[in-house]
Length: 274
Image (tube, rainbow, N blue to C red; front, top):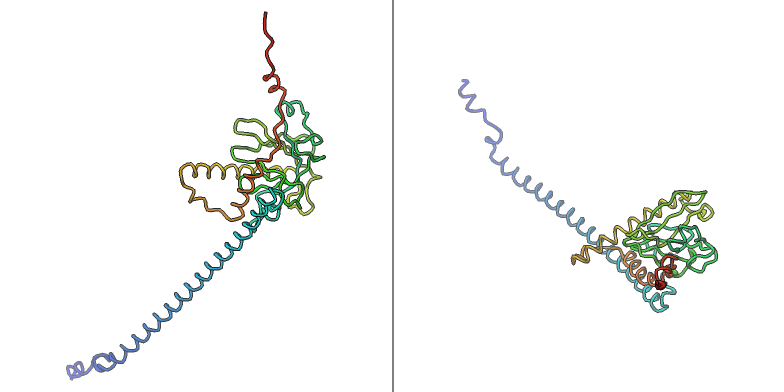
């Protein structure tokens, strides 16, 4: 009896062969739905990525067009327009902005303290200018509303050195790689803009030093890449490329460096001996 019961007891799948046949189409249908859903998701993702790429491309083209028009205006006006503070900022802003006294003095003038803001390099009575750093240059504007910089200071192979503080002002020397002083920048509490996030001359001077260092480092890196023929690695935004081009042109308009007494003495003829 038990043997007969054992023989009669079978699994549902074995007892009903149609169950396998009915389950197979269901599984196939389920797999088909899953694949279809995955394909739809992938297709939607690809479409979204394509649209995003197109938007970025269109945005880049618009920005390039803006800077092309600005560059054309700059060269048509011989550097007198087309490079305003707003244009140089672009959509990403600048590396440094702020007012400061700008002086170009010889080493002797710095040693004797003769360089002063009332006898500065640029013909501005008080020597106060709006400074903007972007790309490889420090742009010197008459004020924040200037349509073009008066000149630009190249920062490649330069370093900004913060001087010991005397009084309430902070002084920074812009030096060459040999240690010669090219410019003297003075930041004062009275020069800070009311909307400026930096509220002390110390912080402003420190930000200036940091921006000069970053610009000089970037310029030297790109200089090496160019020398090695790796210009293709220099992937820069339109506003940065524009700033580099404008800076190279306005750097030619820097005021001449004053001749120091030592240089004058070296040029004087030596009196003949007996």
